[in-house]
Image (cartoon, rainbow, N blue to C red; front, side, top):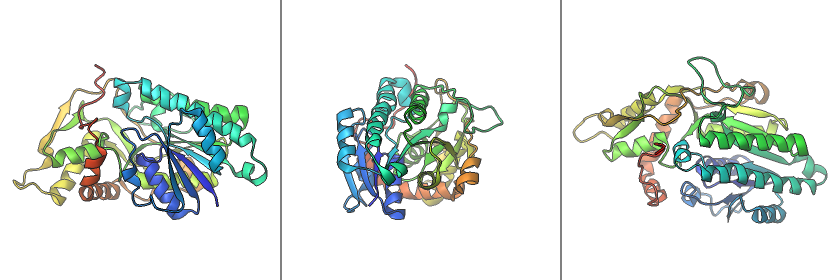
Length: 352
């Protein structure tokens, strides 16, 4: 049976990927996760008893542990999600982002290189290392244009700089050592099991609790939104059909301003969970000081994914956001459990 080592599989995208991989493939999944504040095994309760799933509590920066995991489990591929991923947190504390996203990726690549050298025949020919990254490495767009796979890197936050560094390391291990690396850069993900510090779940939960809905600056910053299950299917497609050494941009074709996102969430909650006084949740919107170095616009050109691999997202933003709001309304207890006390939905990333 094929085996897939997933790093960071208890996080938002990783847990959704594991669930989809177990459903749509015959692979066995080994989940290696440090279980930081944003990684929680509650996100995998529905598959934790599967005979094709196992969990290892560990840090990708621990080179000895990673080497031991590879030697013991002999995976056919590595899917690398593990990363510190929140821009605001990177502004307040960049050191953790350097440690995990750069040093951790180096540790994993180096262990994979040594492991790959020992493989033979078909096992060597079919081995893959998939490095998952972000469109934020490209910097900020003006009012027109799109990020392509050839867009020069211009990261503007400690988070995006650390991810750009890890992208370059992954690319270098392909070109220097022949490690069969694939790289993907995705737009903003949303959907079930996202930690409540990110925009969409934060707005949903704050709205329900009668708290302010903080919108940075004027709310006109634009992001391309990608439903998480569409992203995970794209990753499975890259693993199956992608060419070694290539990178692929994955986007949802859904450009929205931040204020539009928040207003849409308010309107859905007005319909699905109306207030007793019938006032709109929009009245809780509050504009706050902008994030330092806040990129104006991101937009992905995912033409390569469609042309070469035949992938397109299934969800529009309208269908995806309604599914997302419904999921959070049905899973408020999960939100309570994963917020362990270290984060209370306070403002982060002021640079102070």
